[in-house]
Amino acid sequence: MTGSAPAARPGQQTGGTRGAEPPGCILAIETSCDDTCAAVVTVDGELLSNRIASQGLLHARYGGVVPEVASRRHLEVIDAVTADALEAAGITLADVDTVAVTRGPGLIGALLVGVSSAKALAAARGLPLVPVDHLHGHVVSATLGPDPIEPPYLCLVASGGHTFLGRVEDPAHYTVLGETLDDAAGEAFDKGARLLGLGYPGGPALDRLARTGDAQAFRFPRSAGAERRRADLAASFQRAIVDALVVRVRQAIAREQVERLAIGGGVAANSELRQAMGDLCDELGVRLWVPPPELCTDNAAMIAAAARFTPALPYPEYLNLDATARLA
Ligand code: KG4
Ligand code: ZN
Image (tube, rainbow, N blue to C red; front, side, top):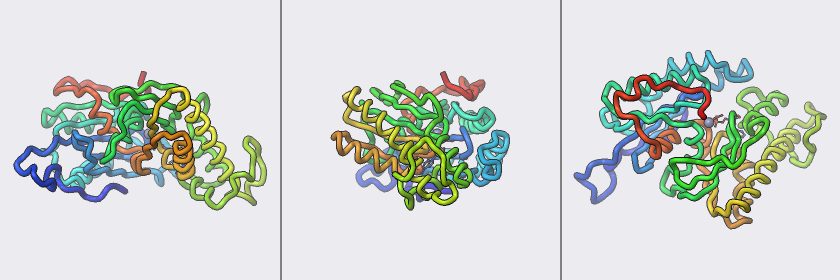
């Protein structure tokens, strides 16, 4: 389990606000795939805790996420992860003002664990519940923290299930400018990693191996020499994916006339992509927001971030809210 260090109670450490009401707290839950996540964010966007129980190792022997295994594991750990997030934020359930949860898209059984758990937590206290689009979370990750991105901005989301470029005029919405017609970038990383014998999840392992390889060694697509030159293959393969994303982002920046870019999704944790987007934005005079890796891969902090810009359902309106594997 990884996450942020314990934080002080909101409003506790700021001078001059003694006696003032601390800002409200959003408790967010995310279980769309194979990470069980809970986070606490203030309504002002301050990140108080971000806990992630990764199931990666549980699925490694199958070479990918097994939906039923994921759901069962979420069920086993969701209460502990939620308690951990509250403790790390220095609050209790009594201090929570709003509960937010990923409604979709994702694995339906996995989503249902988070949605049921969030409904129960909210309903027991008559709190409002905010159903959140997982991809909206990736789009607004860069609005968290001390230097939040402001619209208008472009966002490249590259995750295991989706790769698209979005435009944000108002953080409550995003417009998809274009999306991949075949594999999402993360899926490509995972498949490439599997061919290289790097196991699952493969993206981070391929990222590491590529650092010692020559990215010019192979021209993709083609196949050769997997045993002898694994690092070169990893580096060349990664370069092909990163180059494809850079080309699209360059075109979109030229066309959209926007001066701010954010990146999000698991692949935004990739070291070469982070470097390449930095170089591109330097060249074009665009300001880039790169969230820390733990806010790029799936997490509940981004779900809280999106909840700040999404209408809440009052109790008891959400009692028959359903998870949805696909969102319109
Ligand atoms: O956003 P995410 O955690 O989950 C989805 O919403 O899909 O993205 C997961 C994807 C996986 O395919 C994983 O291999 C990839 O992000 N990934 C990476 C890196 N870290 C995670 N790919 C390349 N380099 C990384 N460092
Ligand atoms: Zn995701």
